[in-house]
Image (cartoon, rainbow, N blue to C red; front, side, top):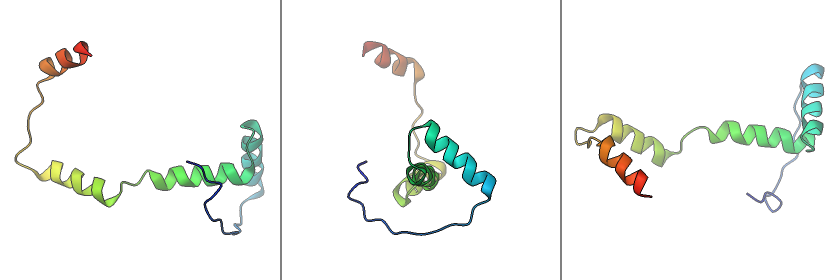
Length: 82
């Protein structure tokens, strides 16, 4: 995702000196800015939460009596044919 055009808002956090030092070292090790590293880590953290559509599909799958059984033999044949 190109984040250059996404509006940014400046903010501040209080971090322990040790954590800040470790983050700076990681950013340098990965040739990234501290801001980019922290934003990427935070974005990955919040992206792990499924959205409403995914949650609804998960609930439907868990509660449905109409689920089909997957025939792994024919599925393997299908995959092998690719």
